[in-house]
Image: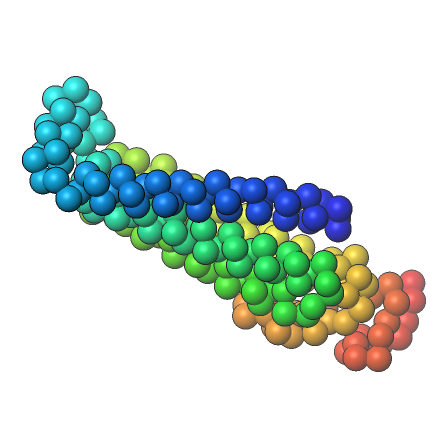
Length: 189
């Protein structure tokens, strides 16, 4: 699991660099395009003539939603990388930091979902289902950290559960090796 987290962290760093470059390029493109109203009108006209089904995607509200989604994903990704580093260093605040990144990511997805709804995009329901699916995966991931004896034994304490935002009242799993701070009885199977 630790090897998987280290590989995931390296891939995450590479992904955050590419996402950061993409955000800078998008901001530059938006500044160039939106600083010229005639160009914006021409682009919107071309889209409405050649691909009318995509006209709603390029509305200002949709572009705002996409930018918010990308920004929230970038920030959540950076915070998730910090959380992984804390887990590798056995810091007990890793779960709280991870929960904060998930909240930021889900807020970005919801903003994007509702901009799709506001623009009347037919993609709204598909995106909302994707958001709910992502939230479900995050809940399963939280439950893994809270219910895993392996994680509990690796950290040597249940303090990470007590510092959780959502799961602080959950009973920690029985550790393979109990520690002095544990609220669990010293019994072995």
